[in-house]
Image (tube, rainbow, N blue to C red; front, side):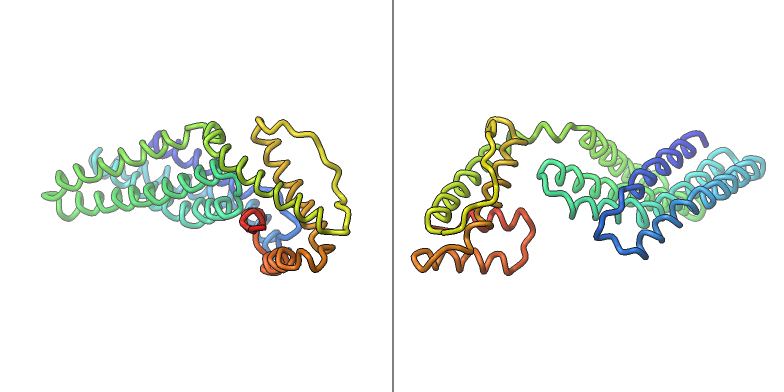
Length: 264
């Protein structure tokens, strides 16, 4: 019972963190209202459900054996966690995974989604175990041995989630530096062929620091976008390539990689 209570408390705290994100200017008004209603109603739904679990636990402990009561409590917990994961954790995780642009953070969000999927499989296995215990006890030993592998996988994924993924940033540094050098080459060519002066002021960057490297990439991209419209006939091919790329309305990462791939 204590373990089930800890699972519910942890999940409730995590769901608060997943749904309490700030509303951006692109968020529809209807979604914002629904999110606010859900945030207010969730405690009202959770407390009666938890009280019901306590009542079921009290009654089953009197009528059933210890093993049967344990299966009943776990079944309630696992059924609730499957619903919680499908309706809250996975949608929030997918949103964060799609929104993330930094590769280590995107890897972390992908690992979260993998953990949720395996955990749902683990809960489904626990529910199957309860059914086998009640209706086909001769299969219980074989099923328990197989469910242990899912338990180990959940523990392994959880340990991986504790890894500080920001430590992986140096692994991507050479690729990002090469991207900056290609952008700088295109920026130099565009500014020389354009009669438009970039509106950005060149800042000093410590390119050995990953954050300032990203800022330098951003500044070069903005300088190219400010200047390419003023390119004359001499650089018409480059201007058309940039226009075609911009007209496709790519994401920022795709836009930067696309401009860096333009050959002079």
